[in-house]
Each structure stands twice: as structure tokens, then as C-alpha cells.
Image (cartoon, rainbow, N blue to C red; front, top):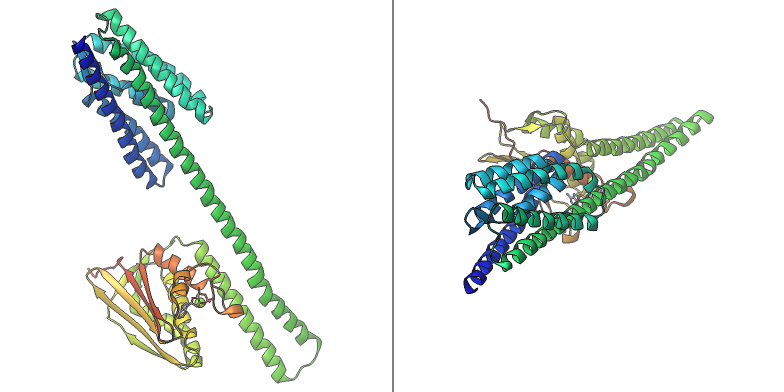
Length: 424
Ligand code: ADP
Ligand code: MG
């Protein structure tokens, strides 16, 4: 009696060990699956999890008596078939593993039970997925108990009956417990994924409604202004001075509308359609040319400190857009003049671009909010979209931005790109 008791404790220990391994494996599979964006690759990892679990069960199986081995292989086999489908694949893997341990009575018992089980599970799979969460867990546990029972009965037919009664308990109870725990975990994980997807969708919907609100506001205002001036011009004969002023304001308003549209378009399509060589010096000069009138207006002196010959890959027009937004902010931060330094250099495989202004600077809080949509300190003059677009462009080019700023002293943007193109 004592030895039987000892054996049963041994079996229970092994099965509990199986249980914890299955849970640990599930945990790591989950971590890997979290990082997969594609549904297919997630499914592949799930399949992989169940196969590896069956494998693990065999490695840690325990010999009860001649030709009879105990482990929890039926749990991943059943759950895998129910959750991932492919019941014949799992049955095949299970039997293959069992075959390696020896073709004996126990093996033939397994063949019978697992093939019958695979047929049953194949038939149940579509029905199973329509059940509620709790029903699914219940069905998993029930099937596991039934399978364990069938295995024990079959063993008893072919072989002498299992001698220790404690083994019965541990062989029915622990698989049921494992099955319940694993399916509960799978359900919880699924639930979290669904909730997260819903949140992401809600975020997107919010972004879209923000977007349309902003468009109607930012675009309609300039259009109304321009329309008003055109009407005025058509109705009365104003002096040339007045006409010039109307036209000047109209153009300014249209420019603003154009800017907003540009920003939105770049933001809406941050994925790059084109990948071309970007000659950093040439494109930065282009940016500075565009912004030259603003620099002159604010009395800003621009200093260029380029390292020649730096080339990175990406979309040229988006690179330009990103740096226009960035450098424009620098110029706008120096309404009473100052110095803007644009510097480039290379260390190893990294191209560095520094934009340094001696403007009003930012507080910690302002730096933290930089790039948030509609965050602006410029009131009616600002859109709060520029940095959001710049950041999304740099991110899409796998670049990194570091911001250093001191109120009253100035701001430095340090951008690193590692998608360098070397001359061949
Ligand atoms: P906008 O320029 O329309 O306000 P941005 O997204 O381009 O929107 O910038 C957001 C805010 O970040 C600005 O309103 C300003 O407060 C701050 N900012 C950005 N760049 C600088 C800079 N170089 N110096 C000081 N403040 C800056
Ligand atoms: Mg701006």
C-alpha cells in the first residue's frame, strides 16, 4: 500500500509538472503572439504552441506500469483541436510521439482513442466556436475528463487494470484541472485582444472625427474670407492700395488652407509610396530656400554646417515636408531675430541632423506635449499639426528624434537616421 501511495504521489508530481510547463509555454507563446501583427502568423504560433505542448507532455511523461505511460498529452490535443482546428494534425503528432516511446499495448490504446477523438473534435470544432466563453471552458473540461476515462478503461481491457486507485484520481482530476486552466487563460487572452482591437478602432474613429472637424474649421475659414474679398472686389471700385491688400490677405488665407491640407495628406498617408535616395544636403537646402522669406522677415541668420555626401533612403517630398514643419517652428520661435543652425554629420552608420534655434524655447510640459495633434501655443496662428506630421514622417523613416530646450535660450532637435545609403 505504501509503495502504491508513493507511486501515486510520483504520478501526481509529474502531472503537476506537465501542467505548469503547459502554462509557462502558453505565457511565452502569448508574449510572442502579442508582437505579431498579422492574424495568420498569430494562428501559426497558436498551432505551434499546441504541438510543442504535446511534445513537452511526452518528454515529461511517467511510466506507471509496463507499457503504460501517463501524461497530459490529451489536453493540448483536445484544446488545440477545439481552438485551432486541425484535429488530425494534433492526433498525428500525438501518435507519432507515442510511437517513439515504443509500439506496445499502450500505443494501440492511444491509436484507438485519439483517432476516435480526432473525428469527434473535427466535427465539434465549428460548433465549439459558437459557444459562449463559459460553455467553451466547460466543454473543454468535460471532453478531457471523458478522454482520460476512456484511456483508463481501454488500458484496463488490453492490460491488467491500473493497480493504484490514487492513480485514477490524479489521472482524471489533474487533466481536467489543466484543461480548465489552459482554456480559461486562452479565453482571457482572447478577450483582452478583442478589447484592445476595439479600443484601437475607437481611437481611429476619434481621430477621423477630429480630422473632419479640423478640416471644416481650418479650410472653411480661409475660404469664407477669400470669398468675401472676391465679392468686395467685384461689387465696388476700390482704390488700388485697397485691392492689393485684399488680394494679399486672400493669398495668405489660401496658403494657410494649403498648408493644412498638405499636413493632413502627409499624415493620412504616412506609409511611403516611394523609396529613393535623399541627398541630405541638397534637400535641406531646398527646405531652407522655401523658408528663406520667413527667416528674412524675422531677421534670423541661418548657418549651415554640413558634412558633404550624406545620403539616406526614403521619400524625398515627405522628408522635405517634415523638415519644413520643423525648421519653420524654429524660425517662428525667433520673432525678434536670432540664429538658426542646421548641422549634419555621420557616426558609424548613423546620419545625424541637428536643427538648433536661439528662440523662446519650451518648458518640460511643452516638450512632453510636442507632436500631440492640435497642441499649439500660437493661438489662431497655429494648427498644432506640424510636429505631429514631422514625427510621423521621421518614425516612418525609422529615425529617432531627441529634443532639448530651455525657455529663453533656445531649442535643439537632434534627429538620427540609420537608413544610410553608402556609395558603392
Ligand atoms: P504649430 O506650429 O502650428 O503651433 P506645431 O505642431 O508645429 O504646431 O508645434 C506645436 C508647438 O510646439 C508650438 O505651438 C510651439 O509651442 C512648440 N514648438 C515647436 N517647435 C518649437 C521651437 N523650435 N521652439 C519653441 N517652441 C516650439
Ligand atoms: Mg508649426
